[in-house]
Length: 314
Ligand SMILES: NC(=O)c1ccc[n+]([C@@H]2O[C@H](COP(=O)([O-])OP(=O)(O)OC[C@H]3O[C@@H](n4cnc5c(N)ncnc54)[C@H](O)[C@@H]3O)[C@@H](O)[C@H]2O)c1
Image (cartoon, rainbow, N blue to C red; front, top):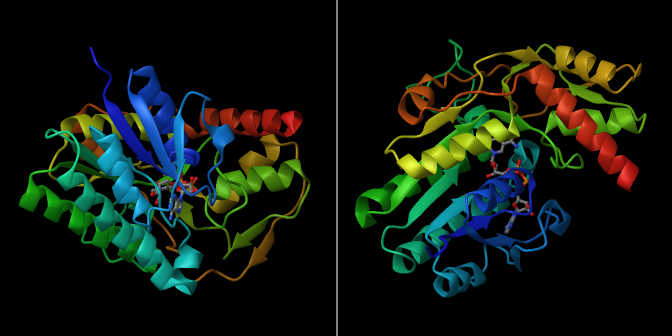
């Protein structure tokens, strides 16, 4: 049997690289498109074709034309809420315009039964919700350009499904964490905490630390993505645990795992950050047969171990 080809945009990044490993295990041929702004070749095995391409350039359309993917897993994005508030035009160029460019090139090329999976956001799309956990029935009212651009891109994905018959799927993960998450950006609090504690550097907490988030281990999100791609349902699906953890509790747990006794440095809240968000993922569980396998304690242990091992290798 001929292997199916997946184009994974942002495949050299955190989530994208985990998607690539899973697809490889399932026998796919993989092409990665990544501008390596935060992604790294070392996140991927040697046998993967990595094209150093910016998705905002016309090179992405040329790549889709030449590699004719069966499926696109679209993970490349401007992922930082603070950057989106400072540079909303850049955020929209990457998260909206480039997504349209990819969808348009894909509808014109590639296998007729092609499928497109879009990585949206569950943490940033709903805004401040009165009743948590938030299900997909909650009307998105994003507080920052990041959530707005993801929501706009979702609507384009749905348009391409209706107008051009693309098999599309949209997932809205909560706060993802795990090995290979970039600790040097403004997103990904767990990676940032672990790196700072292992290097004995001060950790900033924005606000009073009582903010509640829904932290989900990366392998559970990957499983949800692959199931969503397979079922190609005509509705966005949350991928979260439904459990809330405060930033202060997270800080304490990670401190213990890293043997750190540093105190946090409390700073002003950042514009655009949601205060509390957790996701109701019962639709994904019912419709995809998806479930959570790794709880927070186990996931944090695995993540701290991987960061310690990476530090030893350096
Ligand atoms: N990490 C989370 O908590 C989380 C939660 C919900 C949704 N998501 C979504 O998941 C996806 C992956 O996020 P991540 O956490 O793995 O981030 P990441 O920064 O590790 O990965 C993004 C990848 O995209 C690449 N990239 C960025 N801009 C690009 C451009 N213009 N052209 C080509 N490549 C570009 C980066 O180099 C990187 O490899 C994003 O779409 C993000 O919005 C992430």
